[in-house]
Image (cartoon, rainbow, N blue to C red; front, side):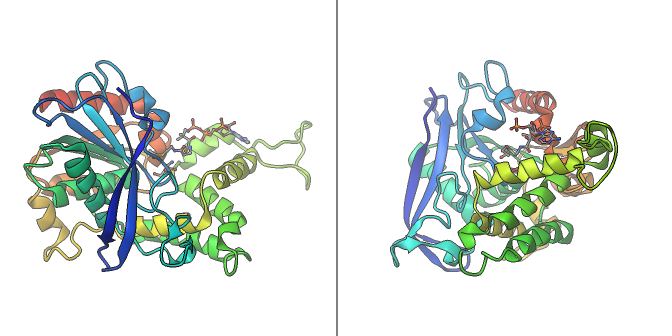
Length: 349
Ligand SMILES: CC(=O)SCCNC(=O)CCNC(=O)[C@H](O)C(C)(C)COP(=O)(O)OP(=O)(O)OC[C@H]1O[C@@H](n2cnc3c(N)ncnc32)[C@H](O)[C@@H]1OP(=O)(O)O
Ligand SMILES: N[C@@H](CCO)C(=O)O
């Protein structure tokens, strides 16, 4: 049984920074049914621009005997608080002003998103425990946070993919230049939802960081549009055309303020913040089984970050996804991801 997507609503939701969201809505979609013991829930967390419709972006992992087998599990895919795919976000109406929040949308952290997702799983879904939490990139950050915040025995296992224990200076830098592109748009000051040129450029930068030199060179080479093969002022590199296309496509599904706020939310990722110990100590306390997936060509969240997690988490193993395509390998190499998830879930039935 598949839901069309529903919203979990929490009144007066207190954020980590003490700001209160009068109405915090979280979009989610379910596949399958809760068993009698209420312990067959698999939670899937999506990446930066993803959504709760799991089948639209990880479809090859769904079906009989695959990772997300809805005849065995109740699969719950949760949106991120602040995302423009159905949850409360900068376009939502601020009940205090009856106008969209816009830039006044409060800062939401990964801890806040997971706090709300945990409430959804406990109060609305009614799970007695979660069999496994799985996610890549920003979804991996939420997965790690589930393990720490949800704790054992409620969260029984995790599969974080292509992420680290905290957002590093490298990742913050890459987020920041994307935000700077948006701030440089002439509309950002007074009509920020219309700062779409900046958003296009931000997405183009993102699309470079999600891939590799090898991937770009083998896909586009030095091809340009001039049919006669000459290079001149009217020619356009194929890679330029690709990035422009990706930028244009993106502004139909995202807005500049949400992009700024969502990338800032990723930057908040730090398992150790306000937990009175180092990242290593926090990881050492996560004793549940964990299968940590890294992509060998990922330049954005390099393998050393997944190795660090496995070094400290006592019951974890590292599996490597082989790809020429870098960070987006978790979306592209679906067969490899599927195999790792199926094997891990079978081992920890
Ligand atoms: C887990 C999550 O939450 S993320 C949610 C899903 N993420 C996304 O959708 C992010 C955006 N999409 C992507 O990043 C990618 O499409 C992936 C990862 C899903 C798949 O990657 P790929 O199959 O390698 O697609 P690729 O990056 O080549 O893009 C293909 C598109 O570029 C277009 N394209 C390719 N070359 C060119 C070119 N030279 N000029 C113009 N356009 C081009 C294609 O026509 C195609 O268009 P379409 O998407 O409208 O069909
Ligand atoms: N392609 C992914 C990359 C970020 O992990 C997205 O757009 O969400």
